[in-house]
Structures are given as structure tokens and as C-alpha cells.
Length: 445
Image (cartoon, rainbow, N blue to C red):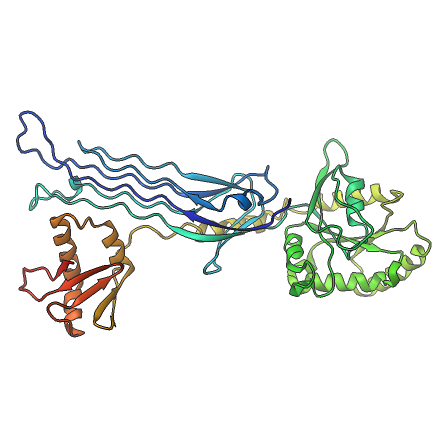
């Protein structure tokens, strides 16, 4: 089964907690702090594997969670960092954030990697909080939570040559003749409903990949028929081999078919209008094909004199070899898989894909009211809270000092907060009380 779209959940591993510990050794009656840092959580990394061709694996496994870092140890030993989780994806996979629609990465090259969920940092142990003022701190931090989100994977088949055309024009038959591929062939429309790939071997040193793509119909650019399910695969091909039925069967006009297909390609993506194209005038073994081909050449020459038309017959193999060598010559004249475009896409992916998850100093906050509760909203402060071990008195006092230094207590007073009012930050609620300059204004409930 060919699967070219999937939605999965990814979560980086949580960081390990820091440890509160002290030296307890013979002849060292008052040993200093010795609690180590927690290890970093593992990242979820997508890596391109050219051996994969579909997103089939993601049909059965939709959750990918990296392991958490180890907790800090005594004797100032740090916990081990967790191993990264490597998830293999086929080349041509586009990764987007399911909630925002933001492009995370466009993975095209074998071995290319991207971090889609960064693991949390390990918490600091109490050895990190030692100072001249506090030589025996009983403070440690929790590890950060790993990044988590739903992402959408969309596969755009990567092939040198893409066969396009209306249904039943002979694309699948052509692929079966020129390669070892065995696509489903039938005398009815939409026999092909998923892309089929085949390797065309011309000689020992020349070969290329050809994709038989599902047939188009008018209005495909708006999603009619197989619509976008087909068109996204055309974007990856370096050459378009446009198969046209020259027999005029079913009352069809070959030139009209050619115009409509090109219009659909252009309306879906304007860049496809400039993609190199060869017309494979198929079914030349039929009685009316010669006359239709002559009329077709005249009409095409009026609007696109650059288009090369090659008469073939998939049934009798007439003109097949000549066409394949012409395709190979054209491929040799083009950059390898659009190297410039691929490098630009990779640069954009590497710029925007790694989460900006490192701690920053942006502690900006907003205060609002939820009935009688004062709500403080701040990503930086909520991140600080998740790292604070509230079962430690010293940690609570440190947290209060930081909030006071940010000016939150003054801001609350200006908003009308009084002794005993409830303050909410994230999932935590505190009681506000007005004390002296040396008092802390927040007590955990």
C-alpha cells in the first residue's frame, strides 16, 4: 500500500532532575554541596532514508517519544544525557506543524536530519547554587519538559521523470514496457490511484527513475478527482513526460487534452509551466493517429514551438527507445535534482526547524483577572516554575525573590491585589500577602 500523508505525535524527552546532596565523608564533617545536574532529554530526529518510498510505517505507529535524561547523582556526578530517537522518513517528505501550518522541514537528501521535538534540559544540582553567601544551598531544579506537538508528514515522490496525462492514455503501460515496474493496468479510468516508480536502464552507465502518476482531470488544481493527491508529486520531477492519446478514442481531442493538462499544472503551481516537457504521442498504432498527430503538431507549434513531440506506441514499442534516449540527454543537461533549489529548501529547513527551546531572558509578563483570581501570563516565568522544586523551602524563597526582582509584586498592587488574594501562574496558585521589604510576597498554597 502506498501512503503519502500521515499525522504523528512527537515529544522530546524530559530533562533529568538536579539533585540536592552533600558530601558525607570521613574527616569531612561539614562537606559542601555535591548534587549533580540532570541529563538532557533526547531529541526526536527525522532522518532521510533513501530505501523508503512511502509513509506506510506511520500508519501503524503514530507516537514517537524520546527518553528522558537521568537524574543528577551525588558526589557531583551529572546524570547521563538520553539517546536521541531517530525516525526514518523517505526522501521527499515535507514536515509541517499540524496546529500552525508552519513548515518545519523539507527533507530531500539521503541522510538529511532535522530535530522536530527537542528534548528538555537537565535541571541543575545544588552544587550550581553555591555562593559566598550561601555555602550549603538546598536548592536544585527540575528538568525541563521536552517539546511536544503533532506534525503532518506529506510525501512528494522524487523522480527524474513524471508521466502525466488524462486517465487511460497509456502511462502505466509505458512504465511497464520501459522498466521492471508492474503497475496495475486496466481498460478503465483511474486504474492507477497511487504513484508507481520504475528504474529505466538504458545502458550500463545511464539510468533514471520514472514515476507513473495518477491521471488528471479538468479541475484537478482545485482538488477535483485525485486533484492535489496527484499534483503534489509532479512538483518533484525534473522532466514532465506528457502522454497524449493520439488515437482520439472516446471522442477526445488530443490537442484539447494537452492544453487542459498544462492548464491544471500551471494553475496548481506556476513553476510547472517552465518545467522541461516532452510530449509522448502514444497509440500511434491506431488508424487515426497519424492524421491526429499532424494536426496536433501544427496547433502546438503555434503556442509552444519549444515543445518536443515524439510519436510512440507502448503496445508495439514503436519509438520507445528513441524517446528514452532523448529523455536521458535532457536529464544530463539539467542540474542534479535541482541542486540549487534543494540546497535553498534545506537551508530554510535548518533555519526554522530546530525549536527555539533554549532558555532566554525574556521574562515579559501580562496580568489579567479571572473573576477574583489574578492571572500572570509569561512563558519565561512558567518555564522557571516547571524547573523549581517547590518541596524545597529555599527553592520557594528563590522563586519569590526572582518574581519580586521582575517587579511583579508592584504590578499586582497597581492592579489592586491585596493580602490574601489568589495569584495564578500556569497550573499553580499562590496567596499574595503584603509584607516588608525583606518579606517574600508569594506563599505556595
